Length: 348
Image (cartoon, rainbow, N blue to C red; front, side, top):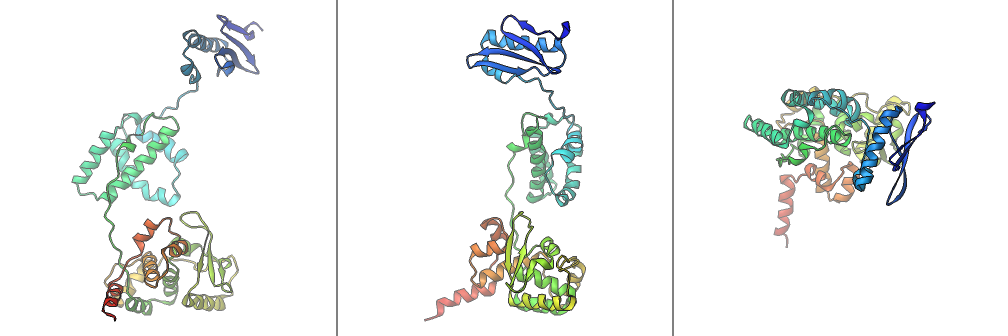
């Protein structure tokens, strides 16, 4: 077929049909080169071969090496990219994070949605965050908006929808780390006395291990080894496996639960961990005015462990904290412990 015949461009580039697509060969200082012309159409292939010939004649080798005829993705507006590209294809957030970010993305799309994706600048982002600052938005909340923008534009830049990430030039604000309310030993025992049986067991599991609510929810009886005195937490927030030794109090509670149920190995130890209302009511009955949630007992566990002399290294491993910095957010020093340490100066 005449249309399928090979072609030659000024003796510099030779085109030929391979299968149904056009390819070519040419020479550079590095030797003979083979390239796909990215087309099944001969005329288009010849035009691209002439582009290569022009670079060879002008000896622009670097530009020739970067020559690319792949179609560039088209992002459209900010909101179209978020809706049609980022969320369904490139977003790596967990389902829980997606749900938490939904309202934030809605507000970002209201602000930047009508703009072309590449038209959003670092200056525009800073101006909008400053406006939200004047409206009373906390540094932590502003950082969450900025983090979302950074994720969106990182994906857009990585996959060729825009050339730069404007959010990368905007720095996070320093956040105030507020100390969490931690119950002292007396308050904790008073709370336990007011909790109904099922909720009491969940609180004990949290306070005696430092496990996250999601980890408590996932624990199955096959993860409980009463003989070895440990729990195996196979899936954690940080996607790692860890072993949590059992305290005597927790060991006794789990033995009691197993004797009551004779559960199947794959059954969950706790069927549900949503005790928010029951916990609030028990705190009120116990006369405790501190703000306490199930996650607070993770802080309490870290605080008790440090006060008891456990090393930060071992505590980090047991609690599954990714770094010592994260552990510092959880482990506090209670006033009683400070007084006990200062009292050592009075001895002798």
